[in-house]
Image (cartoon, rainbow, N blue to C red; front, top):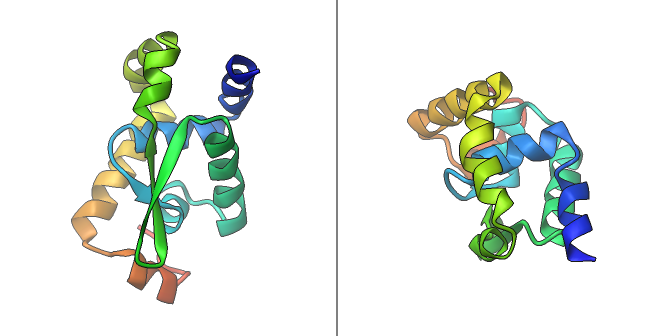
Length: 122
């Protein structure tokens, strides 16, 4: 049941944090790792759960897949719009994550550099 899958997928803080970032722009797993300070396996596992619940979709560019929020799910389940656009902005951790996203984008560091240097942090 798709509705329950969506609710289950949102039942984890890291997945909420990922949604918060992906509602801003498309990001790859290596960027999510750095911004959220997650291991590659942890970030990938959460992305897979969000993708399986059809909350996010990916687009392959070169060797990376960039994920973004699936707008179709927002149309299908209207309560998600209020949750994502109003409630997430109130969460302190989500605000901090958006600051990390801004720092990451300002750094100009791309996926190639992140992949080469796994120890790189913001």
